Every structure is written in C-alpha cells, then in structure tokens.
Image 1 (cartoon, rainbow, N blue to C red):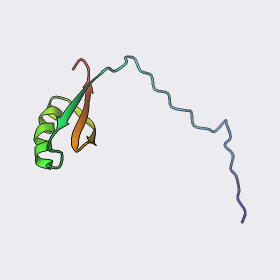
Image 2: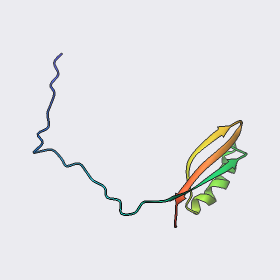
Image 3: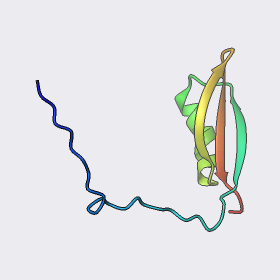
Length: 77
C-alpha cells in the first residue's frame, strides 16, 4: 500500500475565517423541576409557554427519579 501526502501551497490556501463580536451576549438561566418527567404531554405543556417567552431548553437530567430542566435565554430581550 502506498500513501501520498498532499501539501498545501500557502499562496493558494484559503484564508482562515475571522468572526468579530462587537458586544458580548449575556444569558439568563433557569432550573425547572419536572415532577412528571415520563409524561411527554405534561412536560410539553410546561415547556411550550417558556419557549414562547424566549427560553431555550439546554438539557434535562434525572436525579433520584425527579427530572430537572435547565433553560437559557438571551438577557435584555
């Protein structure tokens, strides 16, 4: 088996993209207890109104049989 390593000519290389951030984004966080974690309709009924308020679900964890939802939204909405 033969392998050929290709090299990139720096003169033909694509420039690295640069992103400029003019203002740092702040976040608000919220922790929510979900007592009915296994009931999808109940969880959706709780989370949908929060989504309408701009909250984004980050994760749900289960600790000792109880679910906790962690949400975030951009500050200064």
